[in-house]
Length: 116
Image (cartoon, one colour):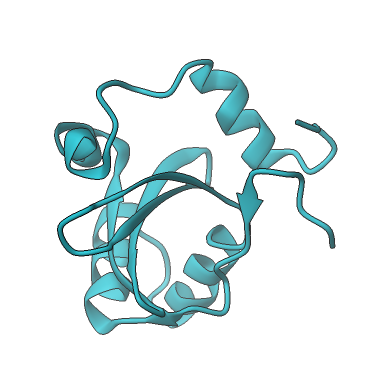
C-alpha cells in the first residue's frame, strides 16, 4: 500500500525490549500480541521532529484511537510514549508547540482514504 505524502512506514524497524514493555504498560493489550500491535501502529506514522543532540527522531502514530509517540534512533525503536508524556519534550525535538490542525493530523493517520 502506498502511503500518503508526509507519512512513513516504520513497521520493519527493530523493537527494543524497553519499547515493547512501555507499549504494553501504556497502551495495554495482550502480551503475546504486543509486537504485532506496535508494528501495525508504526506502519503509518508522521514525523514530529529530531533531537539534534543525539539524532533521535520522534514519530506520531495512532493505536486504538490514542496518539502514540515512538522515539527512534538509528534502526531501532527505543521507547514509546503517550502524547501527554511527550508534550513536555517537544522542544527537545525542535518543536515549540503542538502541531497545527491536530485533529486532521490524527484522522489522516487513521483513515487511509484521506489525502494530504
